[in-house]
Image (tube, rainbow, N blue to C red; front, top):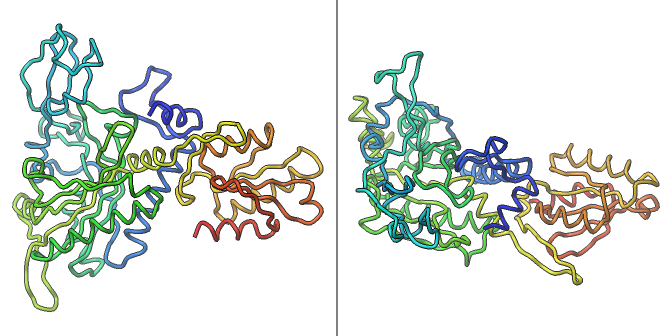
Length: 437
């Protein structure tokens, strides 16, 4: 992970938040390349969920919601982790993750294993961030930063269903920020206190939920393959009875093999009618679906898919990172799928004369005009420029050379194969767009 973190800082993917003040714990800022990567992951998810289907609608619910929402969902009373504190060093850990943690005095051993450790009794810690709405800080004005986007979909179930004239089965997709006051965040951007979620709630008729659960589990696994994640690095983990959340009938995590072990990338959950029934009870409003054909009334079951966008971006970084030797020289490559790559093409003039920079600038303008994210680099040797783009994950480098002035062709070099191809200057945009699909 140290190499991934170093690359992210060096190439402008991720920076420590408030770094000049010493940083803020487990809060990260996405730099020029990182924000593009994260946006590309989110766009790929949104496109596959909303734009490519006619049975899923998009929604952007508010971060701040009525506090009764979180009472109904069970978050106020049950969204807790067991907290342990060492009376000696004052460090805190999740009681159920002690074996994965390190003692503050001796990181090679677990908390409680050092002679100086004095662990107190576990106590429950609510993970929601609490704040106040309005000018007065009092109990009546307490609100929470949402810990998930899902509840916004449930309270808007009828609004979306009726205005879009959807029939069950159909889904509601959301992309948005969520906040969790994690006790032990860490592993770079894997677990953070502020993160972007990509969640979809699929509303189905009771009795068909198991079939839809299997369908969405397969769909989500295929999507991760589609964005270039190696299949051998993914596996499924079905939750046992002691692991299931209070709302879940069935749950399966799609796990990725990170450098720090197998960890959850995305969860697929059968939430039954728990959420809609609870909101119906707490709000006093009926959340029934009426089948227009049969007239049957019921509270739909929900199959949920839930993924952290930053975590998916981290998977893309880890999965794409590799070190190679080319003609005796080392190179670091970020083998991102071209659809996720922050920069699709880099344009180089081989020399700073003979009109090459002017031609390169004109091509750069043409690429950007065609909405192909591209960059320009004329500093250093061509080899150094290639290496910079390899680390940024840029799939293609386009070089303007002396031959370009003679026959209006350029050299396009492939990041992964290192193959070079002469392409007509007027065909570069089409050549790249064709390979982006």
